Each structure stands twice: as C-alpha cells, then as structure tokens.
Length: 251
Length: 278
Ligand SMILES: Nc1ncnc2c1ncn2[C@@H]1O[C@H](COP(=O)(O)OP(=O)(O)OP(=O)(O)O)[C@@H](O)[C@H]1O
Ligand SMILES: Nc1ncnc2c1ncn2[C@@H]1O[C@H](COP(=O)(O)OP(=O)(O)OP(=O)(O)O)[C@@H](O)[C@H]1O
Ligand SMILES: [Mg+2]
Ligand SMILES: [Mg+2]
Image (tube, rainbow over the protein chains, first blue to last red):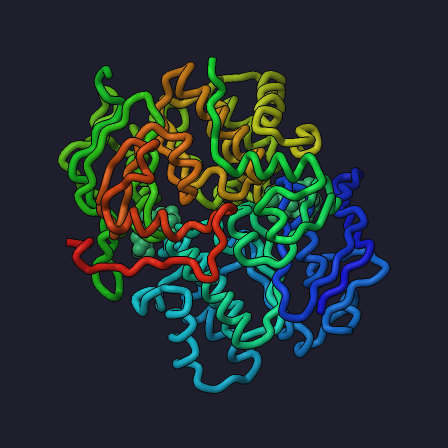
C-alpha cells in the first residue's frame, strides 16, 4: 500500500543544511499497521510528512496505493490519507469550534448527514456533547488530541498517518483510542503508520516496527521480537531497557 | 520533614460557559515539600488547571478560590498581578504541556532562552549565550550550536519540549510544575531529562510537581502520587505503591496500560462510575 525507497529530506537553514532523513526504505502492506520508534529528532515526523506530501523529499520511489506520491495531489488522492499531527494545538484552528473542525472535511467532500456524523465522531473518541461547541483553548491537552484524531477518522480514510496520537492521553483514554483503531482495522482494511515513543503501544498495535536513529532506519523488527528482546541493534536494546522506568543511580 | 514549600487547601477552579459551569478542580488539598510529587489522572481531570492556578495563570472568565494557597511565606491568594510576575520565572515556573505553543514562534530558540537568563539572572549577553548552550547540551540536544539558531517550528516535538525545559530551568526556580514534560521524548532521552530534574530536587531542594500519564515513570521517579478524577483528588499514595492503589479508577488505569511484557487482543477500558464524582 505504501512503498518508500531511499527517502531523503534535507532542510536549509541560514546557509546550513540539516540532513533530517538519510536513505530510508520500507513497505507497508494493505491492512498493516507499521510502527516507527526512535530517538527524538531522528526524522520520524519528517518521514510521515514526506509520505503525506507536506514537505519536499527525494527518493527512488515513493508510492501510495500504486501511484507516485511525489507530485501534487488531487482532492481524491488527498482523501486517501489522513494525518494526525504530533502537535494537536498547532493543527487545530484557534477560532474554530470542535463542531466547525469536524464539519469541515465532510463539507469539502460533499458528505451528507453532517450532524449525525459529527456527533458520532465526538463519541468515538470518548468526548461528550458538551465539548462540541468549545474552542481548542477551552479543552484539556488530551481533549484537543482527541479532536485531531476524530477529524482524521471522520472520513474513514484507507490510510492513516499517526504521529504520537496518544502521547497526551491518559492510559484509559489511550486504551479506548487504540481499541478503536483495532476495530477500524478489522471492519475495513485500514493501513496505518504509527509513530510513538511508547514501546508498549507499538508492540500492541503494530505488526512490524522500524527503529530510527540519526535520520536512518537502523532495523525493522516484528512486534513479537521486540517483546522478547530478539533485536540486533544495541540502540534498540537501550530503548527496551529504558522503557522499564527510571533508575536512580545509587550514590 | 520541615515546613512544606507549598500548602493548598480546598482549591476550586471553575469556568463559566455556554453550557453551564465547568468545575475543573474541586476541593483539592495537598502539600508539597522538597520532593517529587506526581499527579496522574484522566484526560480533562484538572491536572493542568491545578498547575496553572498555582502560578496565577487562570485567566478570565475562570474563577479560582481556595481556603489556603501558600508558597513559602507568601500568601498566593493575596497576590496582585505584579506579585505574580515577581514570583513566576525566578521562584516558581511551569513547563507547559504544549511546548511549541508556549514558545514564541518568531524568535530563535537561543534568543528566547538567553533572554530568560538576562531577565532572571542579570547575565551579560555573552554569559547568557554560554549558559543557553550549556543548558541545551544538558537536556541532550545533539547539536546545541545549530539548534540555538532554529525557530520553534523547525524543531522536532521532543526538541521543542527540551528547549522549553531548558528555558524553565535556567532561572533555577524553587518550585517547578512540569506538565507532561517528557511525553514527546524517546525513552532514553526521557530518562536523561528525569535525571536533571532529580538532581535539582536532591541537590538544590527544589519542589517538583510532575504531571504525567506514564505510570511507569511516575512510580519509578516520584516520591508521592496524587490521582485525579473529575476535578477531585481521589487517592494519594507513595509512588512505589502505585501498583497497590485502591481506588477503582486507579486500578482500572493500571490495567489499561499496554505493556511490552503482556500481549492482549484488546486493552481493558475503564467503566466510569458516577459515584466517583460524589
Ligand atoms: N522545517 C524545518 N526546518 C529545519 N529543520 C527541521 C525542520 N523540521 C524538522 N527539522 C529538523 O529535522 C530533524 C528531524 O526532525 P523530526 O521532527 O522528523 O524528528 P522526530 O524523529 O519526529 O523527533 P521527535 O520524536 O522529537 O518528534 C531535526 O533535527 C529537526 O530540527
Ligand atoms: N478555558 C477553559 N474554559 C472552559 N473549560 C476549560 C478551560 N480550560 C480547561 N477547561 C476544562 O477543564 C477541565 C480540566 O482541564 P485540564 O486542562 O486541567 O485537564 P488535564 O487533567 O490537564 O487533562 P489532560 O490530561 O487531557 O491534559 C477539562 O474538562 C477542560 O475541558
Ligand atoms: Mg516528531
Ligand atoms: Mg493537561
């Protein structure tokens, strides 16, 4: 469903270039949930943005659903894929209410039963009707993140790009969202890429997981192998160890 | 322990709105010593609002009331806006949950942190630059020289979060509220950042309120934990005993966390009981 081959992204900043992604390759099969974990600043969000066509990239192949994704996209092609950004605050318009935010994609794509669809989307992510006419700044961090998820899901897109979708959610709401994603995957063939720092989350939801460091994929492991520590890179082992919690050095 | 750094009794915060009043915090009482106090709880349970109220950051039309709100020898209930400005930054500060939103979008990271040094420490321009670079390095930014010259939108999520932490720590406050300070960090960097906070508590006697959804971190890093639900503190326990917590909401939380060790087809969810709100 998604093919990425030798993907590179370079940013220019006051004469210096930042080589954020350096030759990343992977495939995601239809119906698969592919995970990406790795060091902060290693290029995870940049990879997703390149796939979504939000930023310029170079590659020997970048394909979504059999079509080249490197060019400008039509409305139909954009509907194929939805993005939940890492930073929900920045991606929600401050002067739009939750209702406006959820209505917009439905209107753009000419979909009927607006009211019903909006209230179902709100309920899907565990928000209540009282949140419907609030502005983003009147919501808690996790409530904002759920609005961003509801907006991405409302069109039931074939492909979802999820950048830290549950990092601002308490584990009880996170469980509801993860179960919702599993349910959607069963009810129609949803393909997704999930970026997360939580190894428990990626192991739960993903089939395979890419580990990134310094712009590169250092290895791709199966969820089961991640669980039992059957990995080949020292960095992956460090991540697994660090996910066990904070250890105070004994002095 | 000596007299607490912070004493809060019956804190209430409400927001009047179109559909009635939202009681975001309800009769919260707690104290903070020179320790790490965790706050966990459901999304929307009032954790960030509690933090903002302690720093005088609830703006109109929000209403804050309390029986006691005392920081050291200062009565926070009697603070005027200029008193708050004296306190904030230098003596108390908060790492906000949405780091990029709290940073100024049109100023370079280095300039913003440097400004904090000049404002609160009276540093010279040169000294401020040195301190800023050292602080960025301390929070494990790989390329401090480069990041110094970037704007907030050019940072990754976790770099923004660390820039924010660096900015709040340069002034060496006595009391810090860290609201989800490590949620965008990979687990190895996260532990490094926790170590910095830990040192400040241990060596400088800073009081820390640590708001987090990550139960593994809270139980391994904090001393005590408050559990919030629907604006109320429903339970308090020693952090290391979090797994033995009693309240049904806390128990359900623990069961809902996906773990690397246990594979489940479906995650347990919380069946909320209206009684918990009484
Ligand atoms: N618009 C931009 N201009 C310049 N540099 C950028 C820009 N966007 C990202 N970068 C740089 O690219 C690198 C990778 O950033 P990216 O956001 O992809 O990291 P990430 O893996 O998602 O990290 P995190 O886990 O912290 O979110 C970083 O060094 C970042 O500073
Ligand atoms: N300005 C506001 N106007 C109206 N309601 C508000 C406002 N700010 C917060 N609230 C409401 O107050 C409640 C508590 O919000 P708060 O941000 O403290 O939650 P939180 O515990 O930090 O949640 P999260 O874990 O999702 O960040 C929420 O129900 C929120 O919708
Ligand atoms: Mg990112
Ligand atoms: Mg919050």
